[in-house]
Image (cartoon, rainbow, N blue to C red; front, side, top):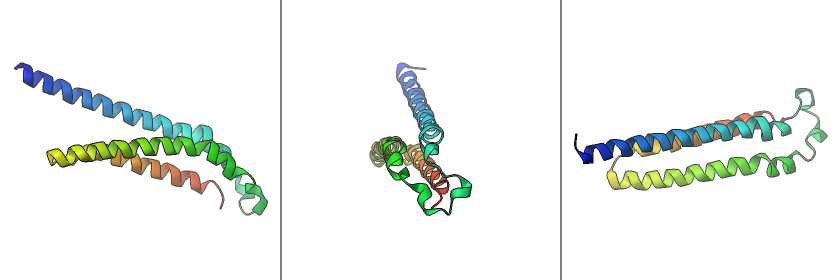
Length: 119
């Protein structure tokens, strides 16, 4: 094994480590979004059809969970743009799989949060 092959395998290993780290950071962000910030705005099931039960929840949601969601989605979009440009250069689209999965996961978390708001 020559030095070039060793550096290539080390580069691939570093890419896998960065990708796994970013995926774990996204998972932690999703847990923070759901467990810590978004769940404070969920409505009680018995109050679902009461119109005044959702009072100032929109303001609480805008200053709590929304920044967490926006920061991660924006970072994932930047990651997808960088991966997309690399995919264009190398004609390989495997770079976009992980950012796409992260964005789909955030969309699922957002929809799950929406189910609990009672509107």
